[in-house]
Image (tube, rainbow, N blue to C red; front, side):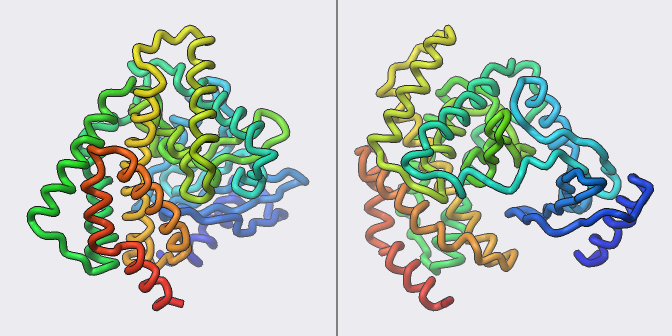
Length: 338
């Protein structure tokens, strides 16, 4: 069913749900999945409508996690109307100003303070009571494989030798073990500046949490502070991490790790995530025809190289990427597209 047909189906459903056709329903945004969003204005009230084709997306995790987070005091959209069969949800409109639009050196401290307070609330959820998947070794590895499969091979045409593949696998095993060694908490899994909305009350509004898992403590912080869409100096990032750890202490968390250990967890977790992100950005172009994320690859790739060069155990990855001149080859590829 084409997207135009789905829009017609959506409008028909909305007429049935609200008993009127006196509303406007305009495109609001699309994301990296098959979901897209509309802004519905009805009787002077504004809502967001999610269109998630049921053959490609399952709305149930979104609804279940939205309820859990809302009850925990996190500002997530409330589901007002739903049709799981059609893949339509009518949600709270959290506005159109995301963190990325507002983040500047002078606004960042307050915005990130709010974002971390919401994270603390998520981390207080009891893991045993969460009906979400576990971020296990298989999933972590599957994500890192996207880097070789879609970035090195498919986009750049680089075929690593058997020895290089073995070296890459050893590095990824270390990243995987580091992730699994951390305290396991609720992980939003995409907690970055495009999924945090600036709200007058209950800032931030938190969206796009349907892929949440039980996973490493540092994961959402890596998404937040080593954001694929905006970069901050390392000294600032580690100062923010210190604040996070102090807040955990004040909350009575009995952490058995020190800040140096946490910095490493954070850095290595970021590398796992950034390898995944580079692969996904390439897949969005090559498989789905979405070129919008290509401009974010240089920043994301630079995080990978920087961390790999900072740790002796990870340096073979930096050497591998430099020996294949991946940054230069990507730049060349980008110029070829323009």
